[in-house]
Image (tube, rainbow, N blue to C red):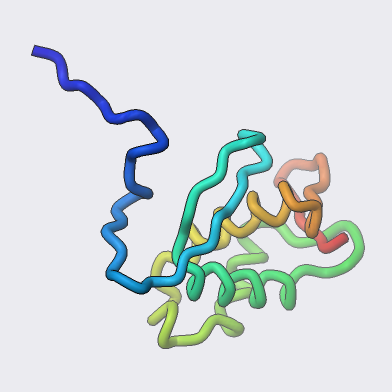
Amino acid sequence: MSVKKRPTSQRSARGSSPAAGTARVVVENVNHPGTRRPVDARKYQAMRRALLKALPARTPGLTLADALTAVLPHLPAAVFPGGAHAGWWLKTVQLDLEAKRVISREQTTPLRLHRL
């Protein structure tokens, strides 16, 4: 017997069962143009502020590993206790800001990011 999946538009975001009144923000993904999904606004905004504070305005930029290390001191402990899930949120915000042309990646190995 096969399991019938709900259409993507009706599926809930990863592991989310948001409490009533939880603020959401819609993020984009530079790797999948046109794809948008809602995420927790409080965590998104905290990571966005920290990432933009940490990234340099010029090349060569920071690697993702360096960016994660650089954002951790700027994250509020109430939102990211002990840096929990910071890596996932860093990648989510990175892809959204690239799609919105706020930051850019260098075509290097390893990948490097900088503000525009």
